[in-house]
Structure formats: C-alpha cells, structure tokens
Length: 123
Image (cartoon, rainbow, N blue to C red; front, side, top):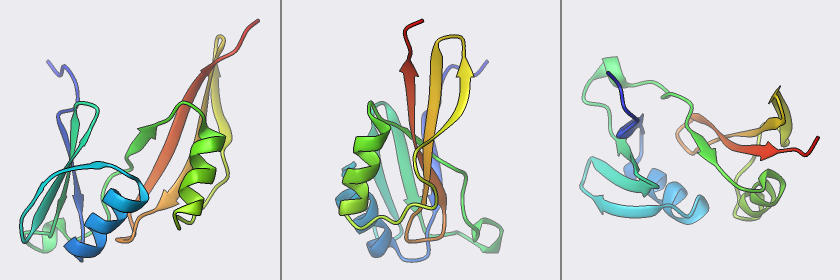
C-alpha cells in the first residue's frame, strides 16, 4: 500500500543549469549534488534531478505541483526571479469550501510544473 511520495525524479539535460534553477529560482534546499544527480528537500519529499541513464529516460518528466500558501504572491515572487509562467494563477476546482488554484511554468529542461494553493473559503 502506498503511504506517501518519497522522491520524484526529474530528467535534466544540463545538471548545473537545472540545479541553479531549482536552488536559486525556486529557492529549494539542495541536499547534495554529484556529477550526474542532485537532490533537493521539499518538505519530506525529495526531488532528484538526474541526467538520463539512457534514451528511455531522456524526455520531460512528470508535473510536480509545489504547494504554496498564497498563489498570487508566490507567482509574482517567482516571476521576479526570472521564471516565465505559461498560465496566470487560476481556479482549477472547487470541492465544498476548498478552492484549488494553480499556475504552470517550465523549468530550464522543458519540464512543466505548477504552483498550487488550496484555499478554504468561508460560506
């Protein structure tokens, strides 16, 4: 039975460029780096940036959804750091009194990711 996500692997083409993006633009905590991999801590889930071992793994990776408290503020802050968003923050779904908001962007390796915020609305 799956309990939670322990690590997400993201294929990259240029490890130094990718580390700079995740460390300095997204401001994630770099745990350690080798010549072909880098690991970041994101609240209990590790992100592993890795040069593809072979052609099978040489493609953009899965979408990683980064939780933020205030999607508009986070989007603005990350834009100021040089991240280009492919969508402004927008409402994705409303479940009861909870709204899920997202804003999508590309990293330096062509992977699509998103900022995500779940906001409780009063009735």
